[in-house]
Amino acid sequence: MNLADYKVVKSLLEPIGFSFKKSLGQNFLIDSSVCPAMAEYSADKNTGVLEIGPGIGVLTVECAKVAKKVVAIELDKRLEAVLNKTLADYDNAEVVFGDALKLDLASLIKEKFSECERVAVCANLPYYITSPLIMKLLESKLNIDSITVMVQKEAAERLCAEVGSRDAGAVTAACAYYSQPTLLFEVDRYSFMPPPNVDSAVIKLDILKEPPVKVKDEKFFFSIIKACFAQRRKTLLNTVSNTLKIDKSKISDALTQMGKEQSIRGEVLTLEELATLSDLLC
Ligand code: SAM
Image (cartoon, rainbow, N blue to C red):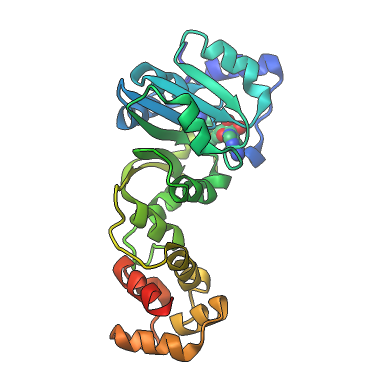
């Protein structure tokens, strides 16, 4: 059964009267080249794969073919009967019903993948949770090697951008702090059923053993990053003092020590410069 075939998807969903929920980011893949490639990038026979949002299981089965084990978290219980059918031949695939944003992923990984040498996240993400989910995966410091995910093309460009470049945002800095990001390939909107309004891309975040910069206080470092990107059109001096209630003279002194103009905007700082600023202000 080719789960990426439009007719097969219809034949599985019509009998259960399934209607796609936009609010759950339900755009199912109907391009048979994408999932095998994603699975190859994420896993080998010793890897445990954590998938978010299996839908009818199109990526789940490809991961199950190459990985030791796959655990897929799905929010929509209406898909249970379909998944029971499509995953029936894969003893190493299991579905957990719940909200990936709310579940305790560290405990789930510990419980499900104890016999795997490494764990990787692989998913065609529901786009409405892209940033919070990626932040959760990174900030929880899970015992994972990599995150290979399909996201909106613009989000992919942002996540993989150079920190300090025009495309960067707060989430870019978080990605660069925790991982080595790579944009793998693009996928056009007509590879999905129903087609979304935007094209997509698959990215891989290889988790770093050590962050590339050392900071005195990681929590404060991330609040500085968020403040720098909070009001992009304002100067760093104004946005950081407004957001974090830090005295302007203290920020001004820090900028002078760093050899930066007082009129600089936060978004142009590199990761190293954000780390220096954070250490000077904390
Ligand atoms: N993997 C399938 C594919 O590639 O065709 C489906 C991908 S679809 C873009 C996103 C999937 O995530 C849907 O099955 C949706 O029900 C599920 N989903 C949405 N929000 C979720 C959440 N908070 N936690 C877990 N799954 C969620």
